[in-house]
Length: 72
Image 1 (cartoon, rainbow, N blue to C red):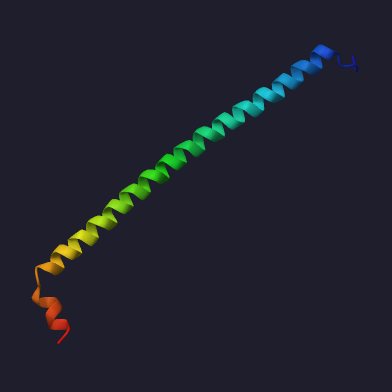
Image 2 (image 1 turned 90 degrees about the horizontal axis):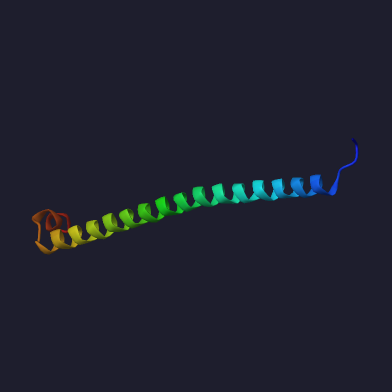
């Protein structure tokens, strides 16, 4: 009973390979989801940044008296 047959060794090796494969699959799914989430967070943040720049530029072009009063 103490000796391992070739078939048992092959089955153990296949089991280890399957566990490694499942681990990489789960890791890929988690990292893929995290990268997609990060991508969309950067996209939304960039749109908000550009939108606020445009808003500030348009507001500055209207010649608000508040800004002129500060520079006197």
